[in-house]
Length: 485
Image (cartoon, rainbow, N blue to C red; front, side):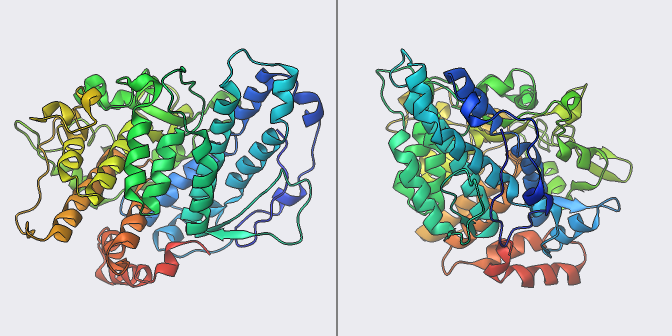
């Protein structure tokens, strides 16, 4: 698909993005002739994400407390780690997300004509397909506003650069995306749900509501997302990938069960997972803080350490240091390792977060720890979740409990303590998957008086130099510094 220019005011788009000339390419007029053509284009929307998502993982890790720089880091990586940004930093280029949006807008322009040329015998297939396209576009917008605090609304496939561009702030954009996605939620047992590339529409809606602090709707749609495709075991964090099998989530058959949305790479086609390169070449490394957290987890029976997710899986050792091994678990071609955008455990812990905000601490803690399967009484509405073993239970870790110092008679203190446990678990389960920075911002914005210290203290804790830690903390106490400018 031809990539066309987009207004990137405030974003570090390179000059060649505007000057690239179209070569011998398929045009929309001769391409959109069949449903198969439509699906080819749908898959093609992911091509810009092959560059954008490794950058997102890098940004997430360095801005948060998960990654640290090394002597091999380039100046731009060091700048991100120091919360210091310039418009020429190639890792914070937002243009690839706009390419996804523009490509999807082009498909939508030709959407109806395809179904007229080749009518489908599955009456609800067009709605499913359009919903999948809107979900990919919504995820791209959502990522932009979480990185930049605002994003440009693109109404078409931008055949020309407009003289003025409308921008929406994060709150207004999220409201817009919710309204666009809601008509495409599938929740009808009469039909067999079709699975397309892209985020699960219901789960994405739930995450948007969670960001919007609308917890009833967040919990409803996050749970509904996990009950997709006939309400089977598929997304319910069962024992399928328990203990030693946890690592199979990232290669092999795990792609079919745990993962919801994925960006693929094939190095022999010059599609490289650059994040793998940065980690193998030791340009970035796991923070000592993260390594310590893995190493001090307690097993449910005996032993210390996160045995099934920690050393040897998410990270490993080299002489004098550590490296990220999560994208180099399978022998062969690490540069072709896929990157997961969304998976079941991610949604489970978001659901636990929403339930905790609603006061359902029991179910939230079950999802975090040993699952619905361990409950003495199944929570209402979770009768089909009885195979759920919980996030920590799946890797045989001792259940987390509310710390003794928390005043159990203070509901706000209890809620915040459980939220801390959930966020800590997300850091371990989802390390180097692009979630941590967004988690810290979301919770910091939610806490009373928009507590910037929540985020600032977490990030500053990874720096060994007290002076540097204090400088980072002071930068992040200013909320305007949470977003690229």
